[in-house]
Amino acid sequence: MLKEQRRTYGIRQVKDKLMERTVLPTNANLTKNHTKKIINLQMFRGLAAMMVLVSHANLIVDKSLFSGLLVVGRCGVDFFFVLSGFIIYHVNYYFIGHPVRYGYYIRKRFNRIYPIYWIYTLVTLAIHFVLMKYTGKGLIYWINVNLENILRSLFLYPVNTAIQEASIIPVAWTLSYEIVFYVMFSLLILLRKQISMFFITIWVVAVIINSVFSFQTGNLLMNVILNVKNLEFFMGCMAAYFFRKYSCKLPKYQLRLLMTFAVLLLAISWCYSLHAGHIYDVIHKMDVITFGIPFFIIILCAVLLEEKVPANKASLKNIFIYLGDASYSIYLTHFVTITLVNIKLGKSFNSFLIFSISVLTSIIVGCLLYRFIEKPLLNWLNKNPVKIETAQMSNMSPH
Image (cartoon, rainbow, N blue to C red; front, side, top):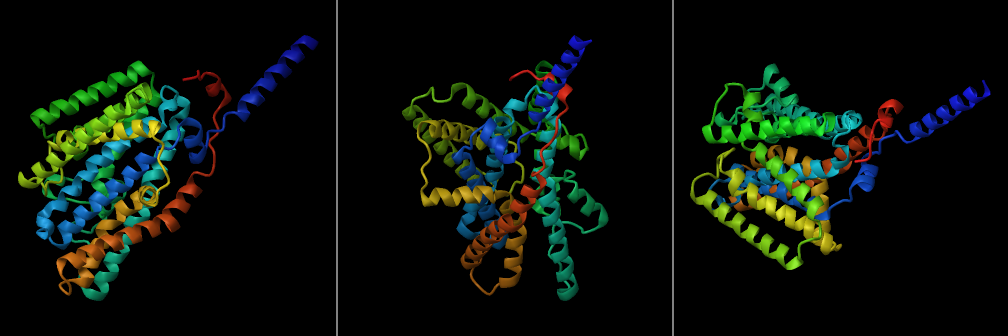
């Protein structure tokens, strides 16, 4: 009897200790415990946001300004997709194969995308209706503002970019691709490695086949799932895999030569897109090659070089790091901000001045919204740790 009581007491102590360890880390601790912050990636996020911003400013203010050169900055979307693939794989690497982490992963991804997006969408709608009431002309000209389109926009249901269809926030079409990627990546967490890799391989092969034969299913969601743009997320994941496997194994001069080569490829692709007439295409099939591959090489070389040459604290780098932090707010709000500036200034000033004011205003507005809305909201959403059942945790093996 006494022996049985001691055994029961011992089991209870073990369970109590396990429960103490079953609180998942917060966002800050996750970065600290599972992967260190890569400065170059954060700077790249800021750079990608700036590329898309100047592209839309060039497009909205005056297409002929700079001979349309900056419109090619739309490839910032390709940059974002490759970056997203790298970051999601790198940050969640230790979650792969551990279904117990699935809920935490989904919650973090939901918190990152939807709440602040909903706020900005509703504010955009409010501005539209106010302008409609007092000026007779609304802000949103790219979509019919009705209940169906509002609901589709709020839940990021895919739009038909082939006919220039857009959401309330026009750039939100890219978020539909992000959601698809998040769901596919979650299979690596939820399922056993062999099973998840089987499904992901089928998906990648289907995307490649569709990119060659261009099947049109008539279903917008299926068109997004099978779109060639998804390969850029896969490229990002592969870059993160190579980074973890071959970190610091290549000499610096080789990495710098390779990055120089990639930048040259990017410049050639930029000129090709400009002169081949693809600068106004929302989704161009060749972008995954002409832009995706150079960005894949640039990102991989940059993170490998950061391992060998730690990033310094130069003021210019700090600016791009902050722009990287604020990139989501800048990305979501810049189109509307540019449109409002263009409406206000109209034909009062020359195109270059309106362009400059639009870009500067968009950066300031995005950074302020990040500082006072997005950042506090994310901190509040992520402040409560998630509890994990002891029985589930005890089945986890070290990755």
